[in-house]
Amino acid sequence: MTFAPPPAARPGDTLDAVATPSLLLDLDAFDVNLAAMAAFAKQKGVALRPHAKAHKSSVIARKQIEAGAVGVCCQKLSEAYPFAAAGVRSIHISNEFVGADKLAMAVELAAHVRLSVCVDALPQVAALGDAAARAGVEIDVLPEVDAGQHRCGVTNEDALLALIDAIHAQAALCFTGIQAYHGGAQHIVQWSARKEEAQRAAERTAAYVHAIEARGIACGIVTGGGTGTVEFDAASGVYTEVQPGSYLFIDGDYGRLDWDGALRWRHALFILSTIMSATRPGMAVCDVGLKGLAVDSGLPRSVRWLHASDDAPALAYTSANDEHGMLEAGTTMNMSGAIGARLLLPPGHCDPTVNLYDQYVCYRGDRVVDLWPVDARGLSR
Image (cartoon, rainbow, N blue to C red):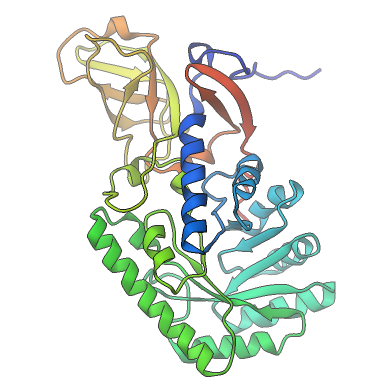
């Protein structure tokens, strides 16, 4: 006998009937964001390879590809498996990896999809080349350069050229370009300052490309960028491919940025929560805390009543416990009448929040229309 909780939602349910906490996806906003990024990349003449670590859903990946994406990025090898199983045929692992278990996954994936990976050290190249040759597969390899993130990536041209030489020496590996990602630039609030930092990253990247081409080597792909800098990266003339991920959702952290340029986004991702207790004046407690809401980029910056009324007070989400969220009303009014009321909370950081849920409850208006699995949830190897 299977004994399990009832489903959180069913197509056709109203949002009032959805169990809480649940991960909600506003499909009207999602569709706008999906189409806007696809159209922008096409207009700028760059390939769009969205980062699947943001959504971890093969359903969403297929929709991105149907809209024009060339494939997806994954940050970890295990994360790529649901996408490969769902028919995504071009996957880029935008991260370095080491170890026999990782090499085994890489060659297994390469037998089913066009796989590209990142390296920034010679031992990585040697191990990957040996494993790919033994398995009889070919893997595309992109050395990563440090474009300003100061995390992974080589920091000088000599190290980059040494990697390329090592890749060329491996019969099962193919040098196809470089990765240059500056994660810190994505979250600079002021639009003009973000643009300046993105331009500096593009200049650093261009210098690496010129060093490669000076050796008579073609650098077919220059991939990188993210939601915060994509409009600058696409217009730089340096990047041939961009890797935005959070644009589909626009979480609280991205929502605080200035968007003065060509792109505008809509919040599409929310946590549906219920006020479960209100014993103190001006305070209430909802049923989502640290186990349902990532707070590494801050607490939710806005709290929306699902059914707002003229006398509903503005609420602030002020602290998170394991299973509880503390809300302040900014007034000394008795909040007991709000028990059972529903709230919409835009998460501060979409990626780790999504990783806490099994499914998206997709809705239009006030009605659930579909349930999409988060089938790459927890795959972090």
